[in-house]
Length: 214
Ligand SMILES: Cc1cc2nc3c(=O)[nH]c(=O)nc-3n(C[C@H](O)[C@H](O)[C@H](O)COP(=O)(O)O)c2cc1C
Image (cartoon, rainbow, N blue to C red; front, top):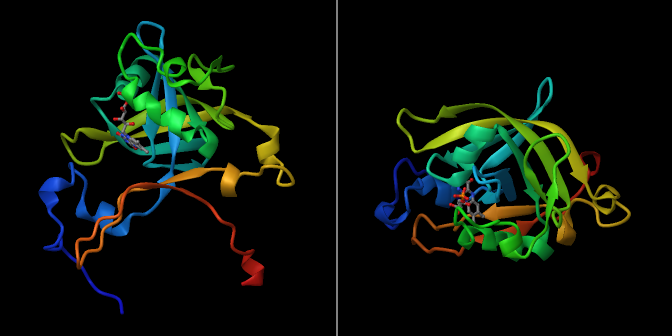
């Protein structure tokens, strides 16, 4: 039976959601998990885990980050350099990518400190993470606050070139999905009736069927 919810259910304590909407956790829609890299003022690589993002082709190809915190280094570095790389980890390098959150000091090369390797992008002034199977070299285009005076912005960046591991675009080899492909963030789902909290998890995509066979 489907049930309707129009406000935060009693069993969910809104004051313990760290600023997220209750809908974030009741819906818990998975989103692609990436690492955004850019250069800080001091020339050292910055790396930021991001997962509220989507991709769209419209006279070019763009990534829309739907919630970039204005107080993160990602925001300040990209506002200065206007250039970045979006790196896609598969599960073998995920835990190293997560280490970039702790290795977050201004005078730290956040990629190397996390056990990953820096490689130079070709078209933009930003570092790439070598171990990630896909890197999108991007330029900043625009940003907009979701609501006035928000701490977060929607940021649009244009993809101007990519570097992709050949075994991942070859479906006969590793491919883009399953155990070795794209990762998704599943952000702590909650049961609106009981309030039961599931831990945040990383997901992979399992192919189901082609449309014409459904
Ligand atoms: C899986 C995952 C996804 C994240 N996605 C976002 C996001 O979409 N937007 C955001 O503002 N922070 C997000 N964060 C939090 C930032 O990665 C974190 O605050 C980071 O330390 C900021 O790094 P920086 O200060 O170098 O930019 C995410 C964290 C994790 C672990």
